[in-house]
Length: 486
Image (cartoon, rainbow, N blue to C red; front, side):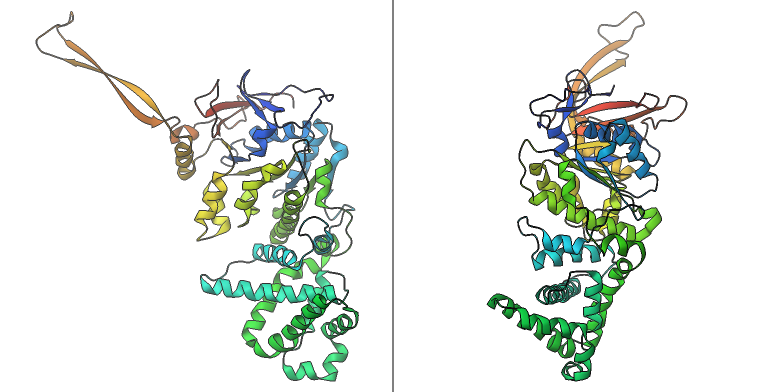
């Protein structure tokens, strides 16, 4: 039977020790900050109780311990759910809701350029951030070498956009990037014409850079930028290639240059991911069900910037833990997810991903990403399984939980000579050992999902390298009472 941990004194010498207990499964089985930092995956059918069962208990345990964090949303109701959590844990003052109705703004490009941490502000980091955003908004691409070609061409375009704006002293905004691109020459003759020069934002930016660049390194970069725009882009590049690259940029950036998203991401900056390191919990109230693809992409912007901030911050064993919380997580994972979850524990970063099935992640990353998905699924040490009707997920759970030696007793009854019982039958006993699953796949389909009449949610928690006293080897069965006061 699951029970929440008892509140610990705020006078503890080290309130964020890795050994601090967050949850107590039995008198001897606990779940600590160290366990949380090793990552958590939660699986369960729609309606299985994964959000209101184990998800809710883990979220509140982290909030009670003072975690900061970033919360991604898919359903409009999720923001209100976290308002309830924060109030129940006495953390209302630490809640920041990032939404069009609120006062908070995040110009992510300027944020990346201004960052003072290791590597922040470099052109390549800006390129990588924007490629992540653009890939998230892509409906699909080709394969093989063609993919590599378009990726390199897109990165080259972005690199020369960012360097032109930087050297020309322009603020780094999507509006300026678009103006730069649409004012670029389409031929060498146009690039040489006085008429184009008089109206082109790109030319004015390059001319300003030429006047202001003093350092030889900047002047060399400016020559490369000018060669790209005036020669390669204008003359050498196939018009169809140029059109495809421009279209890739504009179709993704367009939604950020108008309406609510422009106001949120293209104006000022009065909030940054680093606030979560000081205990703030930022809930991104841009649910995919309401804002659709743009809401998902906007949250991926935040997630990518947050991941970089956590990875590059100077943190130690006494630092406040932070959590990335993603319900319906298949909407938010990217190809860099495995690399992040492998190392973020060293920064006292925790990741909690909830979804229905294992295959959701493969579908999200696309064909050919099986290895990336398996790498991502293999890293988190805690995996929680609620009721599930998906055979692939249940069979995978059976495999990772592994097997035990089990003794079988064989009892035979036969007619014949020798010692017989009162009925004239001869008995024999035999024993054998075999390797069998600790938990069979069929068990997961029978776990309680909550609701009337019992209002009970069941789950099986697996943790690699663990032997639970009140469990079965590396697993322990949990039960959540939905009627218990929260």
